Length: 150
Image 1 (cartoon, rainbow, N blue to C red):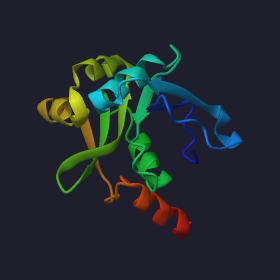
Image 2 (image 1 turned 90 degrees about the horizontal axis):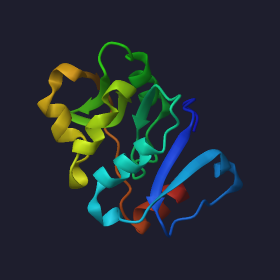
Image 3 (image 1 turned 90 degrees about the vertical axis):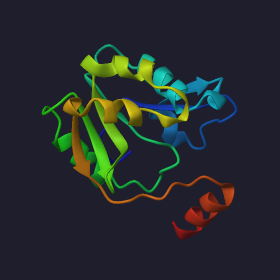
Image 4 (image 1 turned 180 degrees about the vertical axis):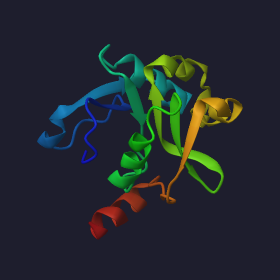
């Protein structure tokens, strides 16, 4: 939350509840069908944004170690093209900023691949920003290890 993004929308499974009062500023959107993949969460998140939002920065919940500097690097390139995407080892990676003019692309995303295939198919929309590799936290054991390090 140190990147200055507002509002913050978290799309989560219906069973997940906020853990601390400091998360009260987060708009929690419940995804009743997480098994449908990342594309379902993208659609729910974009649909929940207020009309005043000019762009969305898409982050993944399984990347809690993403530094705020990566988000700042994406924001700094805003205005060149309608999508600014992180890139690592020649592959698109979150975070991804999408201008409101291109919010409709999330409806084209399918399953768990998110926007990757769509962005690869439309390179003229995308400004790529090289970012460091970030490890995903995909298991309870990985999360506990991360919490012990903190």
